[in-house]
Amino acid sequence: MGAWLSCTSALNVEANLNIRGGVGSAPEVDFRVHGLDSLSRKAASQLGSFWSPITEKGGLEKMLNTKKIRILAVDDHPLLREGIAKVINGEEDMQLVGDAANGREVVELFRRHRPDITLMALQIPEVSGVEAILAIRKECPIARIIALTTCSGEALARRAFKAGVTGYLLKNIPPRELLEAIRAVHFGQRKISPEIATQLVEHCCEDALSERELDVLNRVAVGSSNKLVAAQLAITEGTVKAHMKNILLKLDASDRTHAVIIAIQRGFLVA
Image (cartoon, rainbow, N blue to C red; front, side, top):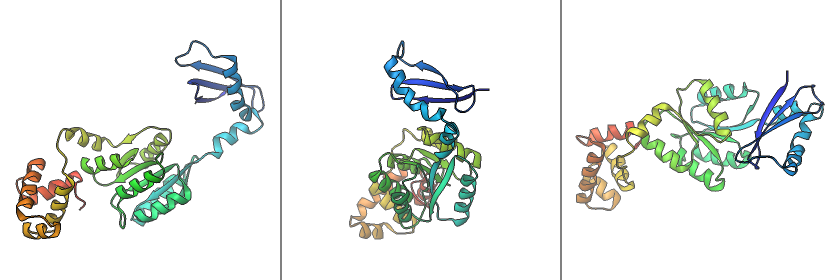
C-alpha cells in the first residue's frame, strides 16, 4: 500500500506523493494543477526539493510527527483547564504549551510561547477575554484564537469576532468537536457552534446597543437609579431616560428589568 501525502504550493499546484516501495525508495509524484494547463519542468524541479527530505530514511515519519499544533489555553476555572489539558495531551499532533487563569496572564504567555492556537475563555478576571484578544492581535495579527464560552448570545459573539477570533465554541461541546475545531482553525478554517450561528442570523438586522447605552444599562443592571447613573456618567437625567427609551426599543423589552434580562441572554451584559 502506498502512503499518500497531499499539499498545496504557492504555485497553486496540488501534489500527491505515493511512496510504494517503502522508506528510501523513489517517490511517484502526481501533480494536479488548478487554473493552469500544465506544470513546467522548472516548477517541478522546485517542488522536487520539497519532497527530497521525505524520501530519506525515516523522513516521512519525521515530517508527520515533529510538527505538533502548539496550544495555549485560558480559563479561570482550574478544573476546566485540567480537562482541556488532558484532552489535548492525549493527541499525538497536539501539545499544550501553557495555560492561564486570567486575561493579563494569557497575553504574557502568548508573548512567551507564540502558540499556533489559543483557546480563550471570554468571561475571565483582570482583563476580559475580548480585551485580551485585542491585545494579542495587535501584537500578532495572524494569531489564531478560538473563543470558548457558556454564553450563546450573539452580541458577545459579534464583539469577539470583531476583536479577531477565528472560532467561537460553547463549552458544552464534546471533546471530539473541540479537537476537530482546533485542527480546522489551525489549517485556516473558521469554526462556530450552530447555536451561535443561529443567534447571529436571527439578530443580524437589529441595531446593536451603542457604547453609551451599554454604559447606562450596566449601571441600571446593578440597581442604579436614573439620577445616580446621570451623576456617574456626567450627563443629565433626561439623557439617561432617552438612552433607556432607545434600549427598551432595541431589545424589545417591556421595562428596565426585562431589558437587563434580555441583555444578559444575548451577551450584551455579563452576569
